[in-house]
Length: 111
Image 1 (tube, rainbow, N blue to C red):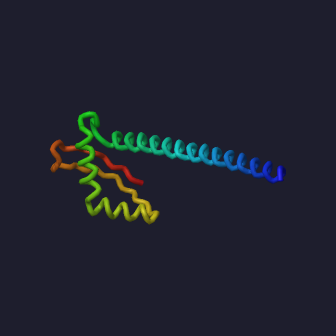
Image 2: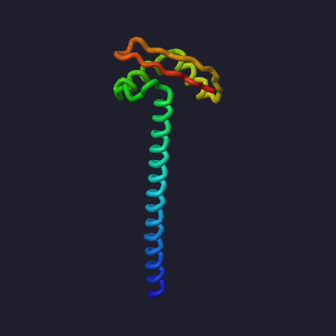
Image 3: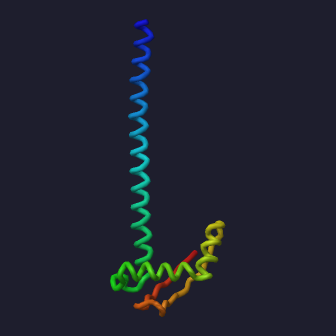
């Protein structure tokens, strides 16, 4: 009987250790995902700023409006469909949005 109780206690300790290990691994996974997201946000922000002429002139709201307008065009939707299908798109052009409160000139390089 004592042997069985010892085995039960040992099994319970192993369960606790495994639960702790699982918790640590889940925390590590969350940290890695958070770091990857933070890196992606910085990288994409830098890409956007590199395409804007004098990016410091614009407020976040204006940038958001620009992206909302730009992504609603049929051209943008078609491009998103293409890249979603794994196709490439090589074109360089300048887009000028006159209908925003402050016109924003961006150069889009794709390829």
